[in-house]
Image (cartoon, rainbow, N blue to C red; front, top):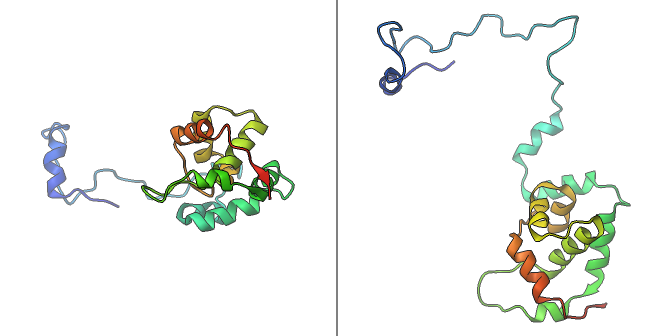
Length: 168
């Protein structure tokens, strides 16, 4: 249980009338009832029970999160097929356009897989694709936990419309 420190007492005096509510640093601000257990009505709990797997998601690294997502996506899902097709393509003409100078870029195969999966699922807007790369497990799986900005997706689409890609 937290107690007020002397520093917080001065701040609290701004909001409370000290004559009605005397403040002592040794008394707790909020007094909780002795019985901390949630009361049951008809033997039912108030909340669903927490699963251990839900708690562990908070501290995952990108690599372990990708493993978790990969296990949760069915083997016959469309995003797996898109990834397999895109990674079988020869993207050398696109890769040749990139320079070694400046910040590292996203690999063209990652951006192509997001674009193809977006086209297949009806998401064409670069802003929506960028949002999906943050919130949708399938897009996170395709982008390998990278979060491209909408301008990156838009520029990639704009700059690579005339390049022909062949199957390797």
